[in-house]
Image (cartoon, rainbow, N blue to C red):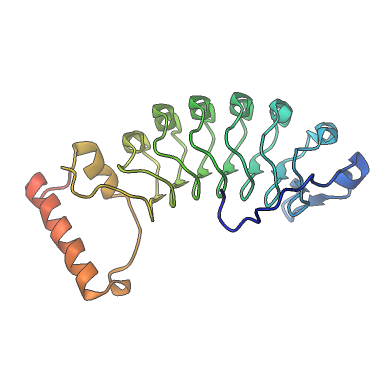
Length: 228
């Protein structure tokens, strides 16, 4: 269950087309954003298909369990926010949103994501934190424009190898995953470790800092003191 959620069941709120139209906002840069967050929606309203020419779609903080196949009608959106719902899976049709720059799926119940997500060639931010993921499909390595990926609070026991192919990646979050640190580091994991920006030294206690320094020395021993 997604964290911070109430356990009671709800039939959800019914949204009419007129209500949805009243939720369309214009940003300072001229983007049209449909904000249906905090509406207690249990399903994505079918009527919003008539508003598919918007630039951003916010369905966060609802009770949604399924993303409908008609999501692919929103071919112009550059931001899709579905965080803090009850999603257990994603439709493959989401891969048709070729203009997506930001996809936020944080705080759901996802145990896997479709390999078709690797077709979102323009994506630069992908947030998958607070789910139940144990692995990523190798196709994620095809997201050559990806700069930020959030994977914290999942079930990863190892750093996904596909991340090493993301040449523009600037930030990875793997906090609070059961990463098996005793595993012998592979060449791929060494490359990715150099890209992680998790915590400053000043934030660590002496014991934690000592452990980090020990692990760092192990990496240096494996690589001969050179960059992997």
